[in-house]
Amino acid sequence: MNGEMRKPFIIKQTNSISDQQTQVEDGLLKENKESLWMVYLSTFVSIWGSFEYGTCVGYSSPTQAAITEELNLSLAEYSVFGSILTIGAMVGAVTSGSIADFIGRKGAMRMSSAFCITGWLSIYFAKDALALDVGRLATGYGMGVFSYVVPVFIAEIAPKNLRGALTTLNQLMISCGVSTSFLIGQLLPWRNLALFSLVPSAIMLVGLLFIPESPRWLAKIGKQKEFEAALQQLRGKEADTSSEATEIQDSMESLQQLPQAKLRDLFQIRYLRSVTIGVGLMVCQQFGGINGVVFYLRQTFVSAGFPPDLGTTICAILPIFVTALGVSLIDRAGRRALLLVSATGLVLGCLLDGAAFFMKDHELLLDAVPALTVTGILVYIGSFSIGMGAVPWVVMSEIFPINVKGVAGSLATLVSWFGTWVASYTYNYLMSWSTYGTFMIYALINGLAIIFIARVVPETKGRTLEEIQATINNHEEDQEHRK
Image (cartoon, rainbow, N blue to C red; front, side):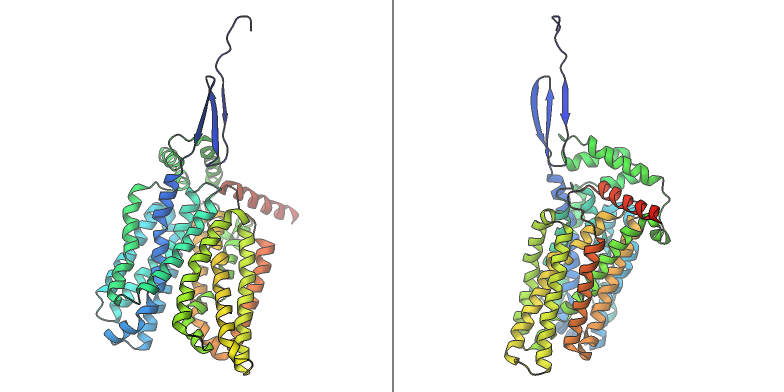
């Protein structure tokens, strides 16, 4: 020592987000925990877009009789009103990525809210089929953009240990929106239900004033000061964000060296695995028949001889609780495990319903048909809600590099909405052809989904977005070298 005092030393240990940070400064132990209240507030604001999505989907079912009678619509005219929502959503899906990249995640959510509010007002004041259709198309467009931008925004602001659960809230709020619209629609006149349905968008517009933009998007467009401020705001003013900021910046610098991606670029080797996973999961999600089953759920119960009001009410409430269970499990069990369990349950549900309708067609054990049908439907919808409904959106928001996230996300979202249209359009034709055969086809598709998930989809639990990208890129480089 030679009589000299040692200078104060600083030891700094930075762990993953939301972990405890420890500092020793001037011999004093200081402990700080990052504050995530802004992450939770930002998630709360953004998932009102998911609730709006659900109200759009759920609106047409309880209002059909009242709208048809008051406006003197034919069945064909009301069918156009119901289905044009999907057309608007497909257009929204095509443009969602570019819009979110150009005006930001918050800007895209503002625009979607404005479309939905305008659409609901058009429906509220409608005097004929044209005003109804214009309003429905506008809400569909907003819904299509929401379906992409909400999970992406949540994934980009959330710490890695909470990202799965927070992103899954997207699907939970969709389920809540559908169920709320269905249940309240039995109490309110259809015009009042339209006014009620614009409330989620209004809440979002106000809430967006108080939350930051996605730091990763700000870094992507070169707004350094805004990026640092947004990240600090999300992690808490006492948090040390230097490590995370450096990781994000390094990733952005690497991506900036790549040209702005176009649709044809998605088929390059470096992006092919990400696109295969994202689009493939959307195919598994939609072509397994979920929207055909749900859109015509009441008629399915009627065909099986089960009380339709009881059946549809149970099926409206069930997804809320099962999706909430999925939220609690996704960051523990992992994405792949939930997807595999979900797809297996979908196969089982389809087999049960296929068996029920086979028994009905061949007049075997007819007393057991209603119970077997409702059991199969509940297994099917519950299985979808715990994994296949939410997890593909979580994985989609995680796997695409940010320089292609816009165009790749738009493609995946478009495939999802196209699958929605195909399933809902073909369901009645398939059921007319063969009731049990329809569910056997869906069982086969969901069986193929199990193989796809097991062989292709990686586990992304507990990794930062940058770590996920590095893993996928290394896999593609290995594949290229083998060739």
